[in-house]
Image (tube, rainbow, N blue to C red):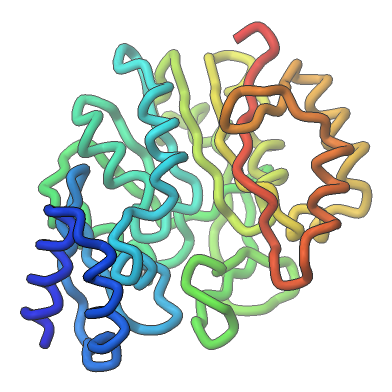
Length: 287
């Protein structure tokens, strides 16, 4: 069944037979137990059929995850003197296609989950990529420790693992991008493109990026979710102060400037079963 499923899926990708594939998937998805290789135009991925595995989405939809945002990032990246930093890399949903298409680009990945990094590593090897380096590390405001839970039974899917301050899960090391640059653990470039998807921990990571933001040309793509609000007592006033102090503006994916108060209102008006408003972009006002 694995070989048949893999064959049908990849033929459907190659010849854009997604409508026919839907019928095949509905009938045979229950029989698929093992991971398969999906061969997209951009890159290849191992995809797992287990219900809560994030990569299962690719088996069902025959698309790479967040393809529109990935294409936007690729379009923005200037190959000359640039670096891409993936904070909360998971199985490499962003890093694998970006590093494959921009094969001269330096790519740095961070994730505190060994489970996620094992998936990333197998996708790196699958695509024979040489320009990715990864760290088993949480990214936050400063050097320290925290707790991280990656027990899939506690989440709706494997993309929801999170750092917490509730002594829940197991201890992990946390550090800031500024510290890692200062200690020369990562070598930064003039143009820095950062993707953040760390389940509400984004503002802590941003606070540890202040020197990098002010010393380099930085573009940050981040997920705006209800969890960000939950992690801060007065998020709006703190974030406005942060934006003003570092002369940053928020844009949507069309680079239209956004108002933070409106975004928070929209976020709070989401249905109870929806946690994420959208992906947004932070840039210096003069970029």
